[in-house]
Image 1 (cartoon, rainbow, N blue to C red):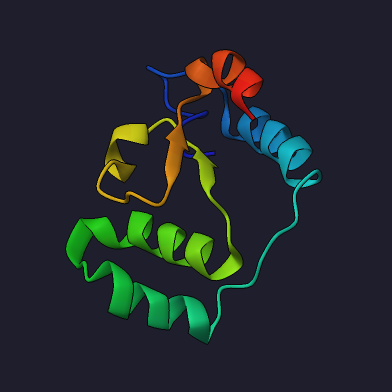
Image 2 (image 1 turned 60 degrees about the vertical axis):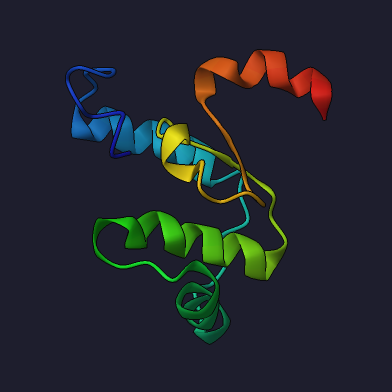
Amino acid sequence: MYQADRPKRYGLSIEEADARAAVIENSLDILPDGLAVHQELIVACRVSGVQVHDARLVAAMHVYGIKRILTFNDHDFARYTKVEAWHPESLSSRLGSI
């Protein structure tokens, strides 16, 4: 929802962004963020500061065996070689490669 309600991105109201996020969330399996994710974050990612949020996502992906993430900030994930970060604008061309 962070990107959807930003005026320069899509200009949705918070309510509109929340409604659209709910549609997506209802089609996903939400995985818990437990001790294994925390340990992966500390041991494997070795980051601090503003990079912690992306590193936490990558740590959870490693723990659960997830290889791809759909994000507007695909360049932020370039340092993680075991993760494929897909920008939404590239999604249609990438779906043929799965």
